Image: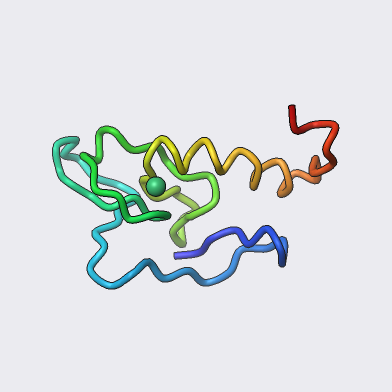
Length: 88
Ligand SMILES: [Zn+2]
């Protein structure tokens, strides 16, 4: 499991907190999982595939809608568009 570090600007090893049930792939939408970023519990069907927290196969882990929208900025930086002009 890796997470994009906006300071180091690279993917670094990421360990979710103990006891969190984080999944990148799940075939049961009703299964309760933890958001891979904040740990909030929600059904897997309500999560979004993270753009910054990924497994070895480059598949994003499920994150809650709030964290997913926050990732927008991390992705902007990842793409080199981190100047304030693009943050409207
Ligand atoms: Zn979250």
